[in-house]
Image (cartoon, rainbow, N blue to C red):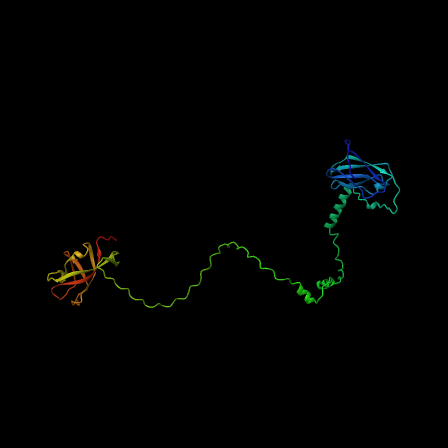
Length: 317
């Protein structure tokens, strides 16, 4: 039943006596609102809370034979309460229907303070363990239900249970499309260092490198003082002079084929198959602008090939 209030905050509704299950609907009842209704055989009013702008009219109010009943919309909080609107209920009398029984306990009549006290009492009792009941007895097992095969037979399937199971398998579906490649995973941590491998077998002896004799100057090593050792093969004329220093009688003439900045003769090797150089010592040095080599008992002048190793004054260590 909709309530339309006038400028005086009064609404008038019309109901029939002996109706039940009726409600009042408000546009905006406000928070903490309740409606106070008259009830039969009592000077006190029934208090009904408003929820979602709606409240139930007590069935006891609808049994009253009165041309005009008044109910009140009431706002309250813990410190105050105010009657904000009046609802005039015009009751149209009528005979009581057959079989209608009014039970005052059926009405949802609530007093705010009483309800608050009841709720607090229930909370306190729960905290004190007053509602800890013992476990009840287990119920008896129910009857087994029909199997899926039995249900299939009841619905028209003909055949054994094995045949029914085989019928559940469908045909092989087509192969699904290949999925897209997943993203590359994150780079893994560096693995532990592996164990040292076994020592390999000794390799075959390699061939000794061939010495390349050349008439072009080349570096072949490093002397003890750190300077490069140069090597060059030249064709020079040997002659025996009796007055050579330290009795080194074999003087190499034609020294123009040797660099002028030779500092030290490291080694001299002679090559000539036509001459016996068995007594050649393989040593030499520079003096008086000449290169002297080892002694020889052979007299005369003849052409020989020499491989000379030397250092230079121009190299700085």
